[in-house]
Image (tube, rainbow, N blue to C red; front, side, top):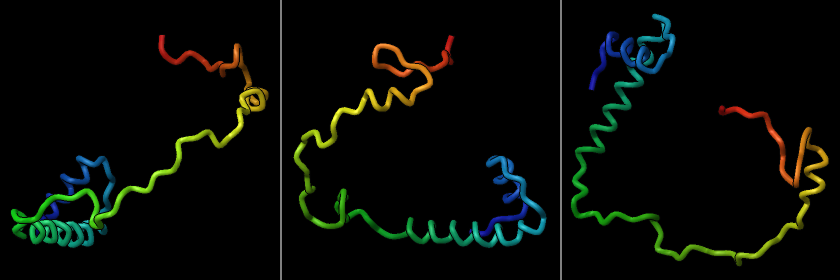
Length: 95
């Protein structure tokens, strides 16, 4: 697929990007190559391919669900600019 310079300007506008005229030709070539690759991939017949979550058939390794860190709340709250009842106090941002 070949993109025109007008297409590049429109894409840049939609993406809110400032693009110099010197950048138009390289962007036009690169984006056209990307869209060409997408067209090639869409042409492949995948109707007989079974979807999979991972290319290798192996079970997920799980670790035991256990607490591994000590409670350091007081230490962290000492560094806070403001704290009350074990909680950080922050400025109100929604009224």
